Length: 306
Image (cartoon, rainbow, N blue to C red; front, side, top):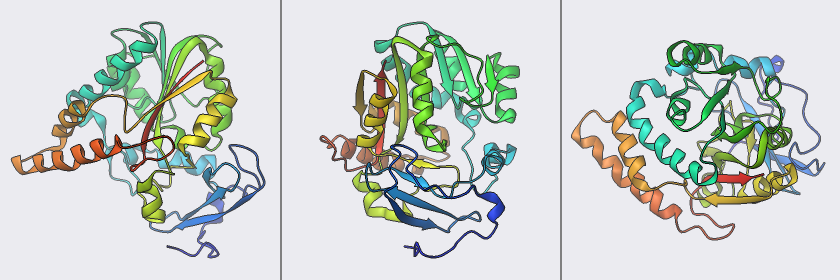
């Protein structure tokens, strides 16, 4: 583990000024947690002693963050990269369809917003039941979704979107919330955008899960594009503070094991690759041992109803 007293910031132009208060609860009682130096752009994360929220401090500038999501990021050729969903979209659809089936238990129809919509594969599946909209920061992937998928995608963020309040029945943020510098205002804005009884679906890591706690600064979720790190407790509290009336948690996800196994086949090249099903199955089943605030793994999905 790196010493938090070290100064890892070689190019100070990449960073905003350090924060003196927790971005989630506002407490000034924060302390250094880890320094992450395994990437070219080093960063430090602090932890709030009041609510347990972990956040990058100092955070990268908006310009630096936007630079992470170049075409190289989506093609998988950058140091910090994304697995291009277009390469195995028909396999990813098993998970997308399973998630949509659960979402329909909360809202069967209406306007559907996916924040961080990427190339639009998930939205195209949701379009069978909903009127779909997307928000995507990358012009590269947003342009593809508009041109190839005919989707209604806003290139930008929650801070500059064109939508009116009480407009959506469903908002999804699948592994997106951790990318935001100021998650509390984002959750409030999602609540404002939703109709009464509308649902916000969030997937992110639970940093109080045993997996994250044991791996410490080696945990794979500590990435340059991740500025915010939650626990089940502080994220649930933040959702209620943002105006949501009830929150339900699913661990590791809200659907079963079979869709995950089917999706994994998209990366298989030989029969030997099927051995990965042992690891995937073990992780999924171990996650079911969660009880209350305890979780043996760090995967979680929250459904918050307005």
